[in-house]
Image (tube, rainbow, N blue to C red):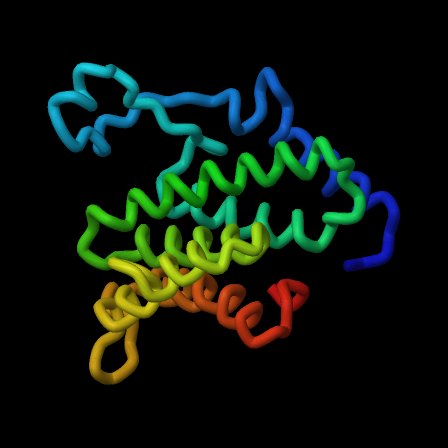
Length: 184
């Protein structure tokens, strides 16, 4: 965006670090017992999810929103192998966030996750999954109807949450209107 080579290289180095086979995103596995849905799943013992950072679920969503936008803007600078790896990362997060949306009550976590999932689906050009994040169960439009009060105020009302809700909305809406990521 700045046109400066040093910033381009720094951004590429950071994004390529996500792909590192030993320490990158797909190499991380953390236990997560929230998603055990039945006894056979429990017996299987596979309760791992991948995490890009050590913060909460909202931060994970914000991270993948930014990664998907940066990857889209820098796409031409990746090799075919790196593109396949990055797209695997985005698919993994998109699948995870889709699953997380099924178990909540409409809150900032889910709003952030639906926005990040939608951005990943847009970058991956997965129309059916984009529609899931926009219109499916606990998708973006359903969440907005649950979290906006009659006067248009975000229900958690604290300024940080209102700002988060606005930021989560800005990039997907801008992209859906054909304006792209560059303003976010």
